[in-house]
Length: 320
Image (tube, rainbow, N blue to C red; front, side, top):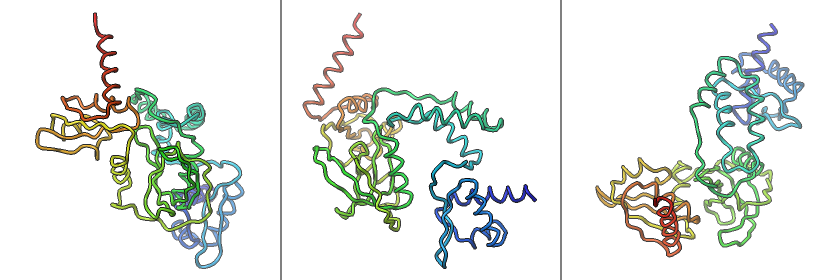
């Protein structure tokens, strides 16, 4: 009897973690019990430290919310493996999170079942990360977490934003997705003041204020947030212009490079055009070096000066 109740409560907790809100009838149907039993199990979860809100009426239901402390989390095997590997290999572009990630990893590995430890160890020893350079401004993990919750809950937020020209403006938006592109984090959101979709760099966002107002999910144009963000980034103005005409088929260049999906344009069967424009000169040089083919370049003087300086430095280094 006790084992049945424990298994049922674990199943109930798993259901509450997968959806924002459940009605008592839906939970009872999933668990094959009565609504009254669901209410008793909810009370037991509350005694264990889980903050479960409930609302009465036809539209009422149960939802798992944040409490004063962190209760135990229920993870299946694949989720536990994913978190362990992510803690080991992640934290790129996030300020001050490395030590916290390692502490969390230590706690997780301590309680991992033996059958999973071997799989995690194999993945960790097979993965390696290469940091070629400091890829961009570091992002505050607390800011990332706050915006992630707003995206999940479709909650309107207000914040201060500094444009690429250094002008600070108050903004109000409906967060949709968080995107990491080349070490820079972006918030894809619907700007309620501009009445249009906008991309906001997280390192330029300050003073995020959740409003408590939730709105229905707004569909992203094209139904593909990643493609939409990539297209916006490729079309966005940059500080330095650099466009390469590459003497190789577009398919070959795409196979050898990463993150150039919407910045690569076929010209004919043997040539293509790559827009390597960026706000960061070393990143332009890195993109061009990754083309691994001959190309001609149409670029701003500052770009050409940087490339010449880098090339001369390389030549001096390889001379006998």
